[in-house]
Length: 464
Image 1 (tube, helix red, strand yellow):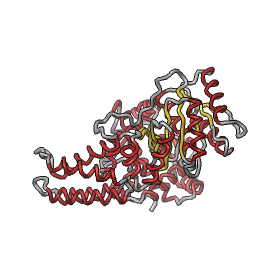
Image 2: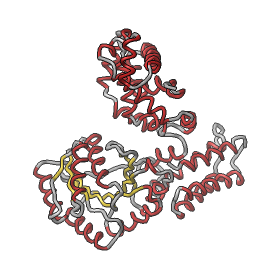
Image 3: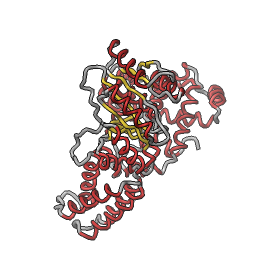
Image 4: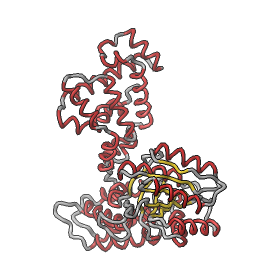
């Protein structure tokens, strides 16, 4: 997100790297680049003015610590101000963002509002999964969208995929009656949270606002979350403001952040509306919803990456018991092709190469950018296909793979025999690496081993 700001800031830092101190001239140059990048990112003008004024004031009054260069000092100031803007004036790490208030007599009712096409129903499923996975809550969902039968079925599907329960509704009912019945059912069956999906419209109109205001009054939710598409830019902020005038919104979920190269809404929404940004949609998958953290977002904008997010992704996708079993197996010299495939699968579950690179600091990501990620992802799939074409015995005993077996495997995977040989060479490298680690070190390495073991070959194009 905000790739232009990252690139422009990086160029300015390089320009002033050799200078001894922060001056009016090099600060002005940097502010000009930031202003252009923010305008291109569709950030609201009041936000830009506030941000630049504070950066300038702090930069010119900054005493550069001896261990920092002027460029590093300026990046620190910009990061602090970006964090402050997204936190609504609070530059500290804490705040309302990314936190849900569930402190009420169960069920805690969460009302989801938004325009049609913003990803509201999918966000209900994502939020249900997040509540189950991270908060250990028993979750029920219900659709009060009586205008689109498909919306009710869609919610049923995503609820099932999320592992939550679904309360049945139909288009012949009134939204208030549906919600009241769902609340009663949730109380009687001891649900912790009830997620209420509401009807979306193609635009803001009085009828829509009256209906959702009446629904809000009927269910008395502890959280009212507004779901908005990040790709709307400043319109996303204006829409959130209009809804907030009709409803007491407690938070915003910004969807489709992964598909938006501008990202200005993330910087603008809290400053303009006063509503905290609580979650961001970072992928289409049901686990692609992250609590919003202003400090970490500021770091990603400035090209510092989000290593913590990468670690969390690894923790989420790696089964420690399986890792321990593999460690014990490796100690006995037993790392085979089935284990190799497991490492590839783990990496793909963490978002694949492109998903991992997005969380790396800019310098590392720029180095990785020289690799054709699409080609690399295809290569990984082909590697899986080759291993899947082997018998269980062949995966367990790669030494059995002689010429005739390789030809059969290549035919089954739709590749050339040379590609099977390259895969085996890559496996041997991985196997050798595995033997160098044992005990606790190995358990900690499980999340990144696939990427480390494969990246050498992938970067060069294993199957070229």
